[in-house]
Image (tube, rainbow, N blue to C red; front, side):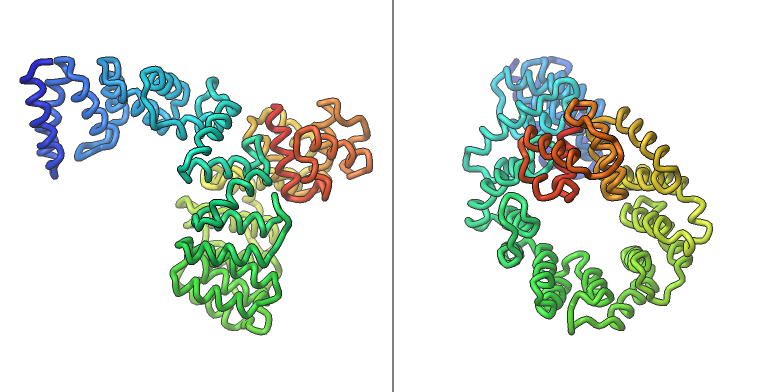
Length: 475
């Protein structure tokens, strides 16, 4: 490359760094384009950044990708990494894998964690190899960086990954927590709270939640308050929630109002104060309080609100993409159809309307509940079995967990059917947790590497998630 090209590039770099307006950037782009046409790879790379990120220009991701690729093919190897990461963000996983693979071949580093996570989350399409992702993540986590250690603990704590091992998660997190790492403190608290990977201890959970809050994870105060209530210290729980409200923790006010109504704060519970808080929030049109009022009424707490009016107030938020609002609206219509007016007859339509708003797990559960509520047992079993047979691994997991929450007997039937297909169960498919069914499930758990989770009850939440994930992995 000539000295003149190099000089002009360096000069344009200074102009780019000082650019503040679109006109400034137009001048920069013009020079970069001229240089890129002459084969200057770094200029093409800069254009990739500008267009993909939308730096003082309208964002044009496809054009940005083209410039990244041009820079890479012209010999600027770091562009392969940028191209791969950009393609991942555009959900073009297989192309991303190929780009990152070329970056690796060129000796480019710094994307190993992204590479491992993408394998584990199956973002590389047919190139995805979760086993390779876990191996790489474990190797990275041996270093001193906290981030890959936390990511490894997430993998061990999530049944969906197929590598759930709560004891291993605890072993990774405990040293980090004891060294004061905020994210690890809160995760260790949750493990002590749930009794996963370690013996359940509310006092230890409470202690770690408070440590996490002191370390900057202020939302940990919500967990701390819950632990104090469960430990029989409701007054302390109320004080902690009030502290969380003063700190500005989102949702603390709702948790306090909910605690007052449900009498969870012991002698410090003040139903009239709780009702007053909710009434004020509803009058302001706050969808959080409207949803709370509906949830409480669904649980048979009468607060003096007109249910249909609450639904009408909440519907606009649900329609505009508020997932919590949509979930609360559907839950109320499902549980209190007689109080829902015309909404009750629209239940299926509402589920379809909010399909893109709800989380995948909530949507799967609502679909399962609708089938179970509106069809005969035999028809519901058949419909859900068909859905499972056509589901992706993630859809399978969500549906199984959703069915377990909706109807334990239907869930048991599906487990019997799924294990029978694997040759792991030969008894009757009747939806009853018979001794033969129990033994088969525990044996499946043992063979899948998590016997202890099922031994204490295969219908417990953690066991259901582990079994569902293991079955989904076989799809």
